Image 1 (spheres, rainbow, N blue to C red):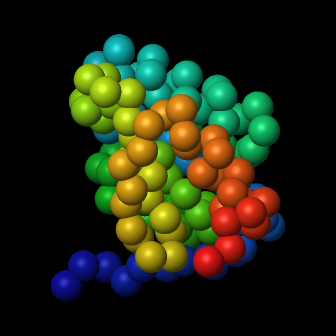
Image 2 (cartoon, one colour; image 1 turned 180 degrees about the vertical axis):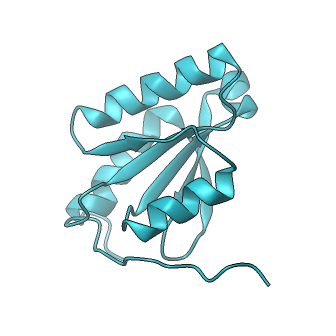
Length: 116
């Protein structure tokens, strides 16, 4: 099996790092540019990490270990249709959503407007 997953399960409202933005690859300037713009927008309101090093699974694990509730991946599809993948830490569920909706989604989860 794979390595054991270490997860700090902070509620999003108290997690020191609210989200992380990952460009899928670091050798595609247009991908980096789009990811940087998502990071910059979210970082105005929240403490958002940037990680472009290593395999995506490893980046997810690094963020799980420090309790980051959401990871946003900018990939080739993002360049086509302005959507990103948002991965939720606790369920590891991945949602595809328009970049324009990411801020509101995070706000709902972090500020608790979105209690299920």
